[in-house]
Image 1 (cartoon, one colour):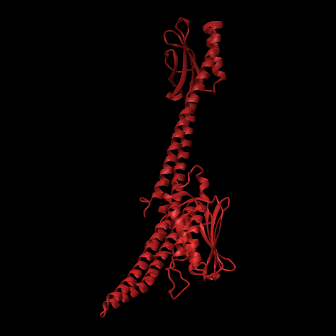
Image 2 (cartoon, helix red, strand yellow):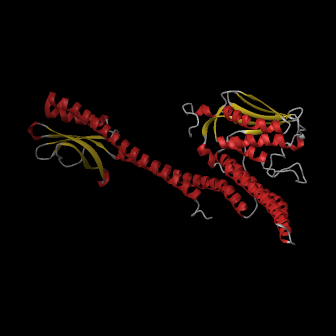
Image 3 (cartoon, one colour):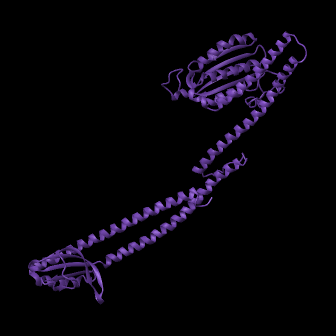
Length: 460
């Protein structure tokens, strides 16, 4: 990318140009303000000088004024002040100010100096009785010299500002381009297939580093999703192979040979069961994908986990008792959160089903709900064989099953769905040893504190 097409350089040079224009406007303002101030001081000076000499006139007339002019010019010889007294005919009767008889009032004059040269002067002309005109003037050469010095100094300073601005723009543009090139370089590497490439982040923790950290977190999330997708594809293919092969075998067996209606009916029932199993697998996968997308959070409502857990306990207690297991509850009231009632019910059902499926008869199962100031904790525990510590993180993974032969019912999606549901509600799934047995807890934040006026079972 050239500097002409680089946004970093355009931004840097635009800023430098804006700064240069601001300096230029400031310099012009200072120049004219200083010039106006100096001219005002000169007007005050010639007015005071004129008033002082006119006192001599009012006391002694033209002779005293002429004498006072000569004395004044001798005293202020180096100050640039000059005086003149013109008679009604325009002849200069006193003073050294070499100019023609001017009009009355404040004005700029062109006066003659030595060797035929002229100079600008600022003058105050006063009309006296008898047609005389008294002129007090100050040479503008000193003011013009000051204006020239100010202009030259400003020009030099402005050139330095331009040079420094260009240099700063090049440095800033190069810095921005360098930092942004790390991001674009990482993006290009990702496009080229290097999914492990990440944006370098320094210890300065500036805005670019913070952006890089956020983008790296996003890339890590994408990488995990892609790996999850790859794993899901592999696991789906593996899990579908056996039921599809079994389904095909049953259909072929039904088609081969002469079989009566009863045998065919049994084959069709087994095939239908296999089809239902496949459909349930796809439904579970779609449900997990739907929850992970985050779209369901828009429909969260204010619900009571205490009431939900009580309803599920009342529904499950008879069925659990029929299997020879014992279920008990410890449900505290007032455990309210904001969430999806159907999803949370599905999570509790999965935990209760797992507790029954993976424990022997006579196992004691407990369902508990308790609330703290910041969290609501739902726990399903049992005193069965439990899970080895090394396998507790494995059983939460998608399609993970400790039964490697995959002869037990299920697809290994139950706990994964529970974990996804917990994360969708801003919580987490914790698996611990119940000594003996297993204790699985869903820890959810009490988001109802952010909606104090929300009525129960009302959408957020």
